[in-house]
Structure formats: structure tokens, C-alpha cells
Image 1 (tube, rainbow over the protein chains, first blue to last red):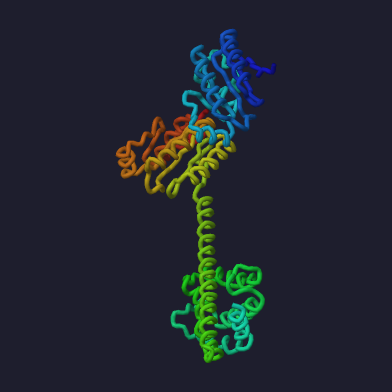
Image 2 (cartoon, helix red, strand yellow):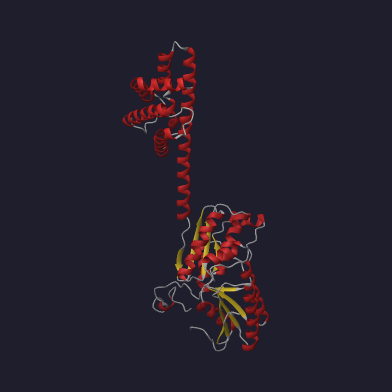
Length: 127
Length: 301
């Protein structure tokens, strides 16, 4: 069964979603991610959705869920790379993902995590 | 019916020149006539129309002006109405082109069929109906022309009225002018998000000085735009809230949630600069050299 790779960069986890999400994949991503956060003691989770052209209410809710789970495990979630069309669709659907932090691209997302997470080594930052 | 039609056809082909001359005299002499149509143009249009009308009556039925035989007449009348609408003539001035044909035509009908009362009545009746239909047709086309004009202007206004300007590196401003409806919100949102992607801006200022009224619907549209920008990683500040607007917002119970609002664009710009770790410093004559490294925009990020 296909899985979405979770990469560790310093104290952050990088997840790049590049395939169409379906229920099973989303559930396994939630499982894997929570497991990884605990294993690596990550402080930040970066979810890159720049290659997603279609986002429905299901994926919207999944993103909100992942953010909530990560928060419980004391890690911040930043969703990056959302396309304009996707953003408009989500807003029209009434899903404005309150509680999820967002950034334009991976670089800015990483900076956001580094700046507010108080990471000692500033891992993953470009500065 | 056939005798009526052949009567009309006969009348038109035999007396075309007389009718044309009288018709033009009628139109030129009309006091309400607009000076927007030149006499020579009127003459050539009248001659063309009468010729086309004669051919159409000869081959097609006078009861159905939407049949193929009337294509040319409809095309000619359509062009004429559209041109007159663009020049600013009124609908009645446009329709008078057809209706002014009534007098000269009926004069000839009386002249030709005066002795045959029954024929006179039927020809008059069907000619009346025909002229009415053609007159209404010009009004229809006139109306359509005006509507096209309005929708084109609306489209142009939509494009003109949603500029996204870069105030500073990473700071965008969106001065909104006019009422926000859902169609406009869509355009505003798209252009804002597109510019956020292009410039990588982290802060967008939505200035509503030019928005005449803010009701619950407009507020909802604003909040949608703010939410969409936030999903792209840009924070929004709403500025340009006039005192009346502030009162309306509170009276209506509109919740602007946790969006930062400012009275003027200048205040919003100040906040935006502070958030991106920049300051604006006045350069005194003596301190110019000392503060040269604190120019606006050169602050560390």
C-alpha cells in the first residue's frame, strides 16, 4: 500500500502531499505522523500541498485534524504552498482552517516554525 | 390572404418611388427627429429598407417576419437599431423609422384600393400588423444593443476597479472602490491571491475607503477574502473604515472576528512595517548622516 513519506529536517517533520488523498491514505498519514512526532520528538510539522490541485472538505478536515493532533503532542503544524484556486475553494466551502498556521512556501513555513518554536539550533532555517 | 399579400407586393413594386419620396419627406420634416442622423444617410437607409421590404413581401409571408425570407430585412433593421442605440437616439426615435412609413404607405393603399372596400380593409389590417412587428423588432434590437453596452461596461469596470498595488517589499494594498458583490469578491480574491503568489507578500492591506456601505453581506465577502489570503500565508489588515461605516458595522452586529482593522491606510501601513521589523525615521539635517542606515525598508528581517 502506498504511503506518504515523512522526512525529518532538524527538529521538524516535512510532509509533501503529491498524490490524490483518499480515506485510507489520510488515516495512515495520521498514524505515521503521530508516531513520528513521538519518535523524533519533533517540534514542528510542515505539510506541503503545493501539488494538490483539488482539495475537498475531506482533505480540509484532515489537515485540521492533523494540526490538532500535533498540537496535543506539542508540535506546531504549518500548511504551506496552497494554490489560490484551492484557497478560494476552501473558503467557499466554509473551511478557513482556523487553528492551522499557513505560509506561502516551504522556506517561509520553516522560518515560521523556527522563529516561534524557540529551537536552539535553528534547524532547517535558511538564515 | 394571398390576395392581400399580392396586393401589398403589387403596391410596393409599382409605387416604390412615390412612397419613398413621401416617406423621406415625412422623416425629414419630423420635428422630433434627432440631428444625429444625416439626411443623406436617412435617404440611403430608407431606399435600402423599402427595396428589401418589397423583395421580402414578394417571396415570404407577411405574417411571419422571423422566416428566412425576412433575413435581409431583419439584418438591415438590426444594424440600423444598433447604430442608433450607440449614437444615443431614444427607442421611439429608432422605432419611428418604421412607423413613419405608415402614412405614405396608407395614402397609396387608399389610392389603389379605394373602390374595393373589403380589399382596402384587409390590406390595411395586414400592413398595420406588419409595420407594428417591424417597429417592435427595432425596439427589441435597440434594447439588446443597450444591454450589451451595459454588460461590457460592467466587465470593464470590474477589471478596472480591482488593482493590487505593492506598497513595499512584502506588503500589498488592495484599494476597493464601489460595492462588493459576490462576483466582484471573486475577482478581488483571485487577483489578490495571484499577487501574493507572485510577490511572496506576507501582509495585505484591504482599504475600504471607496466602499459606500458595509452590510452583513459585504462584511462576509471581506472576511472570505481575508480567510483565503490567510490560507496562502498572508495576514490581512482592513483599513479605511469611515465613522459611519464603523457605526453601521456595530449596529448590524457584524463580527469582524480577529481581523485587525485601522481607520486609515497610513495606520495600517505603519503596522505592516512594524510587523516586518521595519521603521520609518524622519531625517533631520543634523542627524541625516547618523540615521542613514535606518532608512525605511532597510531594516533587518
